[in-house]
Amino acid sequence: MAGKVIITCALTGSGHTPSMSPYLPYTVGDLVDQGVAAAQAGAAVLHLHARNPEDGSPSADPALFAQYAKGIRERSDVVVSISTGGGTGMTVQERLQGVLELKPELCTLNLGTMNYGSFPMIDRYQGQFSYDWEEPYLESTRAEPFVSTYSDIEYMLKVVGPQTGTRFEAEAYDTSHLYTLAYYLDKGMVKPPVFVQTIFGTMGGIGPDVDHIVHMKRTADRLLGDAYQWSTLGAGRYQFGIVTAAAIMGSHVRVGLEDSYWLYPHRDEPCPDNGIAVARAVALAELFGRRPASGDDYRRQLGLKMRNG
Image (cartoon, rainbow, N blue to C red; front, side, top):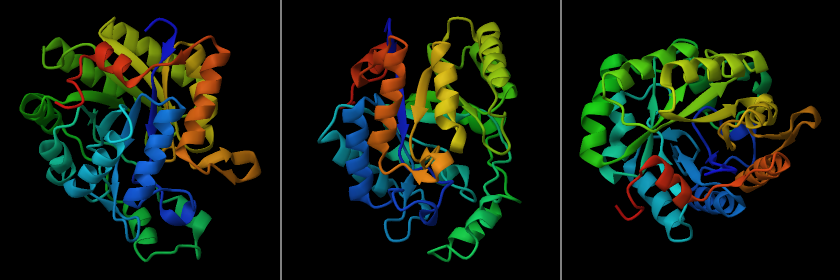
């Protein structure tokens, strides 16, 4: 892996709504096409949420995940990662359906309950929503936290992982989440190396400042030692500034329309395709003498089962 950067592309997420960008993929065809384009541009991992193909609302339907995975795997050897984050209002059981049924190579492990606030976007798009579900869904994030209790984490580690053979990408929105991960690593419940995705700039998580990136990295180094691989994502308009700063420090990176639908936020110019976001991340990495890792590089580095497993 010397000189290589693992690029994850988060294709659609559940925080943004279709009215925010005409390019946000939510049909099966668009998700597959943009996923393949991202892989061809240099992504080693595709991070998948499911959406109702009729109106773009968040979904936990395993059949949708199966269609995405089938379409992508027919055209690419990229690693497919299924989110267990789902969408606001979903139960933990709903969020885990796709992983338990599909047994993917990789899925996310959220390291704590947190307030994930999307409601400020209501004022920005008031009167512009195309679907009736969008505004109430955003408003629900004012009152409903994203839930991932210690019991939920232990269920993932003790049951979901062993039953499926799926490896985890640990998602840390603040330093407290790193302490939680260190606890389970010390207990022997987390198998190293663990891929840690540090997230900056979401409302409810750590802020989008370089000082915070340095602090998270130092904390992870102190708590986890050489048991982890570090990756970084930035939310919204901060996306490429954060991944550039982190890449200079040696981080792997995540980009995509889940995290930001902007290409040039200062021009109000949206990103037209996930593949373009990945191509920009590749260009940034190459400026620092790094090249994109492949899906098989990731599999070997993290000890994933083979894609037909």
